[in-house]
Length: 246
Image (cartoon, rainbow, N blue to C red):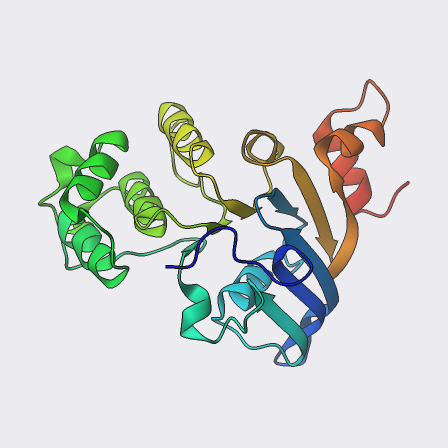
């Protein structure tokens, strides 16, 4: 397995250069360039339709750019080798509906080559309070429990790069705290798409704001705070940036 220290010559684990992606004449990504240094944690913010989910799919290799280049650890994301050590949680993820919780975890864990798989599965089920549902088929789970299972599947192999799209959707507050603590314990490069600033603050140290498929602002959360007045909330500052108001 590739380690978390595997990077391109610039020290970045994720790089996009002048990337464009169009769907049915709608340009979802427009000359987008960004880079994520290895070991850093970034939040990807933007209004609905800004291109956040498309960006994650391009990085993980589920989509191919129309123009420009994408690399993950210095490799083409379409190359299966580049996906080793990468964990991806799409928005509204759906595990295998006809398999049980344990079967989902064991199947994906086996595909990922997880060592000591039984203990890893037990740890994730206990941490995310899925043990009582381990024999239940996914189709019978609540939406919150499906989300917990999806999170477990995305990190079962202890990835060195984690890409997540709205990871705390459908989760109650106690479960959100458990998930945040578990994710924080991963020593990984993070890119998390979210529209909730509290999640961005808890999971990441840096922010990339995109709008109309291109980067509008990039910096640390501390820089973001300093760009507004002391009375402004982070939500107010981000909203102002998204709407183009200085």
